[in-house]
Structures are given as structure tokens and as C-alpha cells.
Image 1: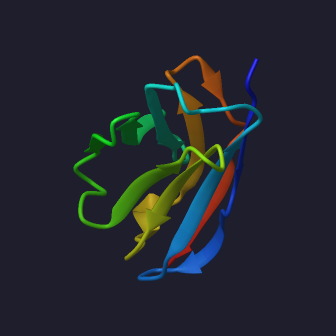
Image 2 (image 1 turned 90 degrees about the vertical axis):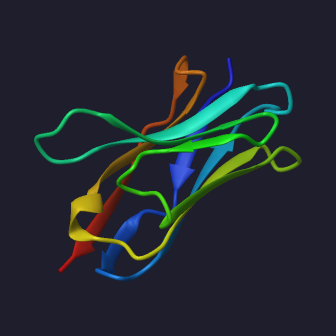
Length: 112
């Protein structure tokens, strides 16, 4: 079974940027749906963004215009470019394949 490993999280000031990566242990070429969820302190896990094999994307309203999801099938990697970060973006970010396979998460902390 494919495994996912997230990286790129960290501490950043409000207004800053981070790029998260999600490396798959196998090919993602035929994977239809991949995406990012996040879980903030005391909150439920919520959708951040999704992308299909055809490049169609969906974003949570709270991140539209600030975050960009992309995938590189040649590198078997999913990305999340996060700009204009806000303290409310603080969360553990998880990537997934079709909601069946999940990574271990990477912490993003945005200071005010």
C-alpha cells in the first residue's frame, strides 16, 4: 500500500508563506483524487483543498485566493502553497489519497 509523508510545516509569522509537500511511496499517476485536510487545536478535521487527476481543484472558502494545491505525478508528490498565512491557519495538515490513505501530518503554526 502506498504511504504518504508530509513535510514543509513550521513556524511562520502572519502574512508569511509555506509550501507543504506530500511524498507518496508509489506512483500517483492513476490516483484520481488527492487532497489536504487540517485539524486545528480543539477543532474537527476539515477540508483544505483537493485536486483530481485532471487538475480540477476545490478549496475551502477560508483559503481561497491564498492557498494553491498542485501535484507532480513524475515526482509522486502533492503540494500545498500557502500564502498570506493567518493565525487561524494554525493546524496539523494531513494529505490523503481518496480518503483511504493518510499521511502522519505536519504542524503549521502561524504567529500573530
